[in-house]
Image (tube, rainbow, N blue to C red; front, side, top):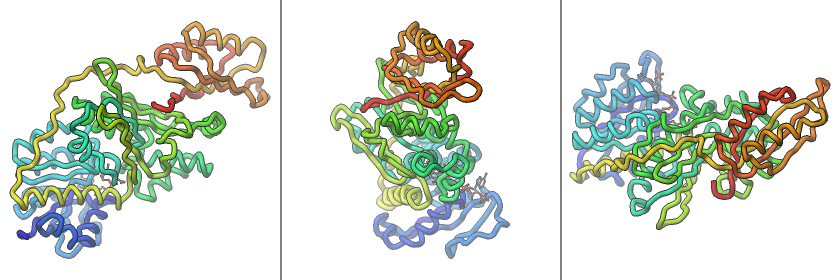
Length: 432
Ligand code: NAP
Ligand code: HSE
């Protein structure tokens, strides 16, 4: 076994502290796997005057140069989060010939190809297993084990916070704020939790997955995105009644000559494989021409699972370095596939609306939908009329085109009898 390799850790929050703990508690195992011992030398935080319990031998700093310019550090672990300065620090570390392991999905979704090219230029590794799916091995399988496949579809639940929240709201009747607070306490949520609930975090992860799966550059901004904020207790009740489970779905497709990438709440049939993925669990389903459908499942957030993925990457990097093996070349993402608009999506829809409870209203609504070739699958109006003379109506449609459904919603909202279309949720079939 060769000498010890110095680690520099950017960030000592939920993830950074868990990485430090794992490097200490599993030191013997890690050294045996990596072929060299690793030692945590420096830890960067925003505020070094705030005391932290660091492993013996590690120094705390709030000066990035003290860590990034330290010649004794061979591997930098980035667990700070955010786009900048994290991306700048990653680039500086790569430029200085240090290997980098990051958990940062925002950086990889916005600057991944540039950073990977920079790493290759400097003969070092940039690994990012923890950026998607927490503890689930998914980047490695995409880069290696599934490389022989033409991949055509990705369906995923890739945000632990929202999946935990939706599970607790549906099963235990928790309110939105309480469910979010508990997810934060458990260390699942992003430093800025709006990134989770507004779907940004899942969109970053889908951009990474779709880029690797379809071998084309998908930027975070290419992903159509809706968060979970519009979901109401009524939606959970109707979903259950209709035999569905509410999930924040991330879906990528090869369609025609292009790709379609979207993150939004979806009603999944209770028997769908993703419907039973509950709490902080994440899952990624992939369809390949050789493998068929393959599903990867496990804890998608939290300190332990994330440290598992990060330290696994550290071991791989050190193993390579210790044996003098060159890092693998960056994945080629040069297919230049066209981005398909959400307008062209064809699926079923759920609409919940509030309308005047009087004769002729249902006929007017049905007429609007019919004129746009949107066919009704079911209608529910069981709430008695409120004192204000309105009632809640729930409609599900047969498969229809997104653009047509959106136009129909606008036209319904313009009807005198319709007070509001309170929600529109896409309904998935057995294969979404
Ligand atoms: P966190 O608890 O908020 O910790 C962030 C840490 O980074 C803190 O120690 C903070 O310093 C430090 N930091 C932030 N900005 C900095 C700056 N400009 N300069 C120096 N230090 C800075 O966040 P986290 O939950 O550990 O997440 C960290 C990263 O892991 C994010 O990219 C996140 O997306 C990713 N991730 C998280 C999870 C999870 O389950 N939490 C799972 C997978 C991936 P102070 O302590 O001084 O504020
Ligand atoms: N906030 C993220 C989530 C952390 O809840 O999935 C894991 O990437």
